[in-house]
Length: 137
Ligand SMILES: [Zn+2]
Ligand SMILES: [Zn+2]
Image 1 (cartoon, rainbow, N blue to C red):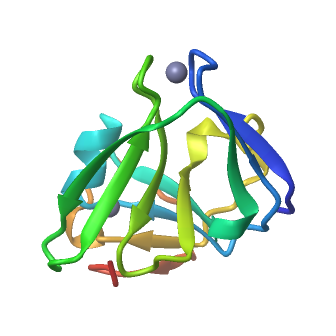
Image 2: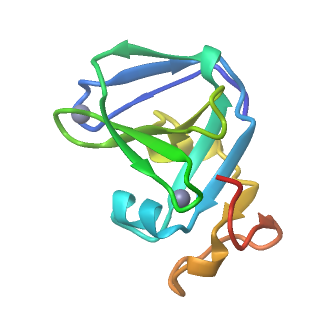
Image 3: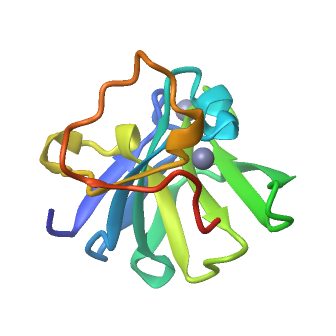
């Protein structure tokens, strides 16, 4: 998928613009991502931080230390609570946008799945993409 692209939350309070091309598009099956998304997994679009900007609204942030000991900060719309993006302390130059927040997510082609050791049986993932039992983050 090529940039630029735009996206936002459900209620339109939060809007963003991204000039950067995605570096990675991944499924994360970790239990944190499952709970925060309310479904089987989180789908993230990793882009360089400089290419990403909020064009409307201010996100609400929530920080948690992951099992690795490194921090994860998740950003939401303060009004409708939609997931917008997350940041990993381990990759400070990257923003992992919630794939479902893109205005046109249909062109995304995920190329990686993480934390397959905690994947639920009802999560269907396309065959042939790179797969990791755990993750670097
Ligand atoms: Zn909203
Ligand atoms: Zn995860």
